[in-house]
Image 1: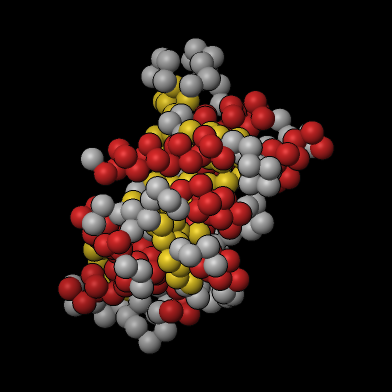
Image 2: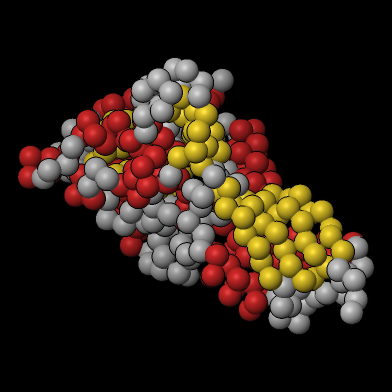
Length: 116
Length: 222
């Protein structure tokens, strides 16, 4: 539901870098988004297509890399990837511990963009 | 065909909001005004909790409320009727508040004369979790009728809060809500979260909530 303001931020950052680098056309944009985020890839692209009309970023393809949810066992320090759907019921695969802490999975990051 | 080149961007998408949120936190730290962001689903008891909080704390702390209901003034009017400074943000269908909207709310309140401002965020367990409002503390309510499985469905919200209030515990005997399963799920997502059981209707547990708030305010003031 909050894809619109997030997409506005993406476009703003992209246009800033495009201007700095004398870009004529943005071809694609690589994003890293944590799996804990509820953003829908399809909607980000649709909003982006709408917002970017008439700018150098019009027609750019968003490449969204979903970053894994990483957790760590507080008992034995083993790190591993978890799925969003069973986050509340994790058991450490190494020691069976139940004190699991979230390490990453909330990223919202623009990595790079392909331009002409 | 023109050659395609790669530009490294390396920027956080939410950096602008984080910057404004940091400004809000610093500004309110100077006036020693604690900002608390209250989040939950619609109908879980945000306004009832705020009214209970006002009744218990208005003689001890100078309170203000920023209301973000989608498009009505009902909540702000209920709060203002208690003699508390309240400002209603018309979010016009927005699903969350961001730090810029909160700044507008703070501008409309006389912050120099306030100890605690409570933001009643838009009723939603998804979007408000993604946007830093500039609050010093994040608090959420989960009400018993919503079910003990909500941490599994909305893990981000549970992972960012300092306190979880389980409201409507007067409904417990009528439901299959499993409090120990809930606690286990929430603590797995967020081991530092404090969980309190309350009923805004009967007043049960409200003392513990008010004590938590007073203690956090004392820590904040130092």
